[in-house]
Image 1 (cartoon, helix red, strand yellow):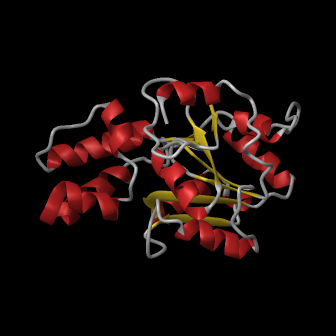
Image 2 (tube, one colour; image 1 turned 180 degrees about the horizontal axis):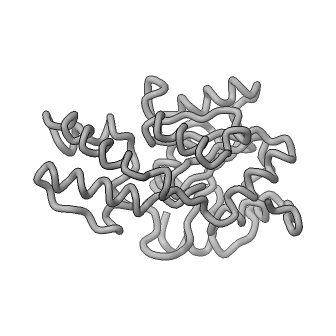
Length: 237
């Protein structure tokens, strides 16, 4: 999808291609929480320890999408497990303390939950770190399911975690199941699962290079409530 097309979609407050959701699946990093400084910094410590040049912030946003167990063997070859240990050691140095919700994230979760809409998180963050972060924010009660990398046989963009959540919630896939995320991998998993992809993109910087067009584009979590038609004034938490 072209940069111009994404910007045009972002300018719309609603999109008729996206029916009201029966359930919403969220990506985690940089969809609900701001973790780019932590992820980029941790990755660059790892790259330099392994003799690689560090990545710019823009390069990191393009290259960091798949799970560690899938991406590190390609990047570091036979030394990928050594690189994994460096990455985890650095990540554990304060990732919870630096964790910050993105604007409108908890308000959106609270409103969807109040409407009885089942919610889930499907992330390529290693599962133990993902669950720790969800618990640290006190958000566990919002979600029917939380799946991180390594919990199922395949990680994103394979749709396994979406199907596992829908089975747990007693729902079938469809265009009224939303997958909300900030990267092309999130658009890809939505397509693979037969769901509607809602891309989160502020409009700043280079547009995500999505091979498949998302059903809708929003500037942030607060815009999700407008997309579904909720009047959230006075009901944010």
